[in-house]
Length: 388
Ligand SMILES: Cc1ncc(COP(=O)(O)O)c(C=O)c1O
Image (cartoon, rainbow, N blue to C red; front, side, top):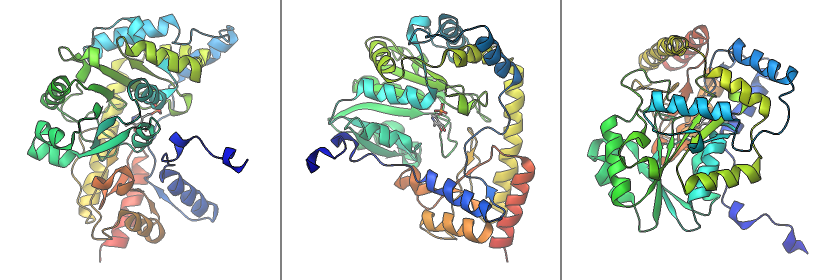
């Protein structure tokens, strides 16, 4: 009897994120009336555009409230395909697009569609934490490839070093969370050549495609021969400040698209119909608005990163996304201890780097998608704590 009271074995190794613990601690401090300089989050600083909110209301009032096709409403899938052709250089049509419950769901179904138990997946590390759990949930194994080593010693060589006979896929995130690293076109070409040589599938995560400050975003699936072997994932969360709406999409060819369709059908049976009509409106937002936001992020990035360096936390200038990843070894070599000290002594909330893989140890992640004044205040608190 007691034997029945156990979780499915494939979940044994799947953990919860430490990020939640930081969030809880921040709430606790705030509830106790303390000021907290909140750099631990990863959500855009602005509100969802009003045209998007209005589209949701109109969809509800217009009774667009029934089941939609589980892969997504036609107009949205067509608009996404047009965007992918124009912006990402992907030659795709609506049949190659599936609407998902955010980028996280797109990634989840992508890994589920590709991995068998015993497969290995190469992840550039530091990596976005949920990825390892998604891989583990497929009873597959994450092989952590240090990004810094790969970039200095050569991507191909490093991928060769970390690969095994069981390697099935590469997770390719650019711009990266947590480091803000942006892979160049040349780097994408190297990863693509490696994937082709070893007959691997690429799972591309382009959640921050519109947040590149230096250089340009490049979609790996646009390279010759890559569309067949890549599942590319995107989200409305970051570009349009729609984190709570839970809408994103995946792009793939067969046989993977059929796999994604099955998984979306039997997990959520499609994203909320009204949300999809609102997402369609988001795609009508002019490029100039997105570019203007990016400039605002750039100012925040410069403010924070220069301030961190001045306060004695060495930090490279991130090229994309909205995170900075300074070294904090002068506080403690253990990033959990460093983050704890920053929170309790300076009331500065960050995420310990080790949460993003062993390669993140000695660092903490600061999110700078917050008010510039809040950045200034956080930096003042840091200086007070760190500088004599
Ligand atoms: C690298 C990366 N990929 C994907 C996502 C997924 O975002 P969402 O599920 O909100 O679309 C995030 C969110 O933080 C992220 O940082």
